[in-house]
Each structure stands twice: as C-alpha cells, then as structure tokens.
Length: 436
Image 1 (cartoon, rainbow, N blue to C red):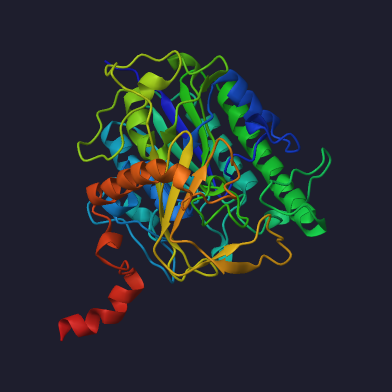
Image 2: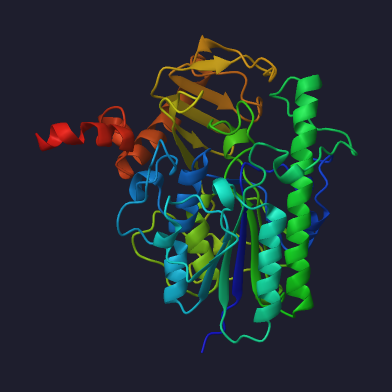
C-alpha cells in the first residue's frame, strides 16, 4: 500500500517573486526564506497568464486557458468559467483518497461548490469581503491540531487574498524598516516608495501567516509527511507587471518542501518551467495517476535529488503566456507570448498604448501605440525596454519565435486565430439573436 503525504498549497494573489529568497532584500520574509533554505526553490518558474483566474485554472487543471475555457476573470462582469467536465485538482485528490479542503479564497470559479472540495473554511465574510491571511491561517492551524491523529492524508488548498490591492487590507501597516525596493521599470519617487512600502507590509503579513502554519505542522508532528507548496498566481499589481506578458507579470515564486520525500536541503531548480506543468508534477511526486488530457507534463525528473520514471524529461525550450484583457478596466490588451531562456516575443491583437518607462505611477501615462510585435533580448535587456523586432540582426530570432508561438496557438486551438475572442458577455448579449 502506497503511503501518500499530506499536501498543503498556499497561493498568494499578485505576489510574483517579491520575496527575500528571490533577491528582494528590503522585504521581510524570514519564514518563507527558511522554507527555501530547507526545501527546493524554483528560480525560473513562470505563469501562463498575468491575471488571476487563467493562471490558477491552468495550475489546478494542468490545461491551458484555451483548453479549459478559463481565459479571463471569473467574477462579474467578465464571468469566464471552466468548461463543463473540467477536472480540478480537488477532484483528482478526492478520487485518490484524500480529504480535500479549501481555506480562504479561490479564483477558478464563481461557484466554489463546483470544485468538489469536501470541506470549505474561512470563506468570505459579510459584504463579500475576503478573510485576511491571518484569519485563514488561524483556521488552518485549528484543523492541523485536530487532525494530528488522523490516518487519512489531506489536501489543503489555501488561498490568501494578500497581496492584492488595497495593500493596507485588514489594517496592515507599511514596512520600510529595511528600506524600499523599487523595480527598474518603475520610477523611483515619493509615490512609488509609499506604495512599495505598503506592499512590503502586506508581504510581511503573509510571511507571518505562513510561519503559523509551518509551526503548527511541526508541533503536531505532521511536517515530515507533508508536501508544502508556496506559490503565487502572477506578478505584483503595478504597471508592466500584472496584466502584462512582460517578465514582471509572469514570473512567479514556487517553493516546495517535503522532508519525507526528498524535497529538502536548500536545493535550487534553475530549469525554465511553467505552471502548466504544476499539476502533473504534483501528481507524479505523490504517485497519483494523471489524466490523459493534460497539456502539461511532469518536471519531477528536473528537481534536484528526485528520481522519475521518465528519465528522458528535459528542460523546456520555451514557455507560453496569454492575456485576454480586451477592454478589461484600464488594460485594453489581448496578447500572446513565448519566452525562452534568452528571448521574449509578444504579439498583441487589440489596439493599445504602451507605458513610458520607467513608469511614473503617480501619472502612469500611456502614450505611444503598442507595437503589434515586441521582441526582447533578455540577456542584453532584462527589463524589456528595447523592442528589437524591426532590427535586421534579430530577423532569425523573430522568425524562430514567431513560428513557435503560431504553432502553440494552433495546437491549443486558440480562438484568437479566428478573430477577436467572443467573451461570455458577448455570448450573453447575442443569445437572443442566436435563438432568432
């Protein structure tokens, strides 16, 4: 009989890699940093989408947004949804004999009951407001103390609202005690320092919540037999990050720790990876069969110290991303992108303007037309400021990456190849005409 570990997955809103263990020295994240020092940190891990629902849907179904149907935000007025019959990780874990629980938020559906969790805790409070990470962590700690004698493994999906705006959610105070880090794509001024100090306070609050869960696992004797995952859905909520396929929008943290399963020792995995592969990797690690219709593949064999049945597994040559914004708020873009170790190609399919960089967030002007094609040499231009798509020296790279991107769009039957993507709002509006 296979003895499977407990599985704990914490997902933060809008965090990217804004953590000490990923090089942001002014952020206080000692608990998450220790997890990286004791576990495995994935340094080159990206999301399929720089917005919440498509990223989470990809991570938890192992299927691209074009495949699972969740191409935009689930809540009104956008109302995107997973296709009927899509199987979420909670369904798969339940079928594998796990006790499945949701703590805090999810953003894969407007109806959490459809995800198949056996139990749900710390859901939204009055007026629909989410619970704070401290409240959610308190519920998790309470469960862990009761569960310590159980002989059935559990799957706990933990969703923190933080670090979504407003950064002072639940009364969090700014934190500039170690200074304030301003990314290169943001203008360093009084306004940016105030906003990033508030973000740093929010991140510090998340770290404290993570610490309380880690301590409860240790105190109740469940730490060794628990696969603990910490990750995020997409980048921080600032211009050129969230909502955009630039690296600050799609780069995300992934840290795993499982002392009983060899995910320990402060290892680093530097392979280029995508969260489309998270679900098959997780199932591979805990010895649960994966569905055959997945777009993703396991990267277990690439994790230092792990053995895998498929010894032929190789690092990805490219990862792909999608943003189906349309007229979403102040982000009227529709983009598809391919990223390799050295280059990034973004194609835009909707009229939009680009930011002047570095962006003055006190007045984030959108001036010039967004080029239809953007190509960046990430070795020379890691901030993606200089578009070389029209440079003859890069013609070969442009052709190669364009071919990869078009082939991916064809493979996932992306609706953008047939015209502007019909949104759920459009389908609702045109329903009467279709009946006619």
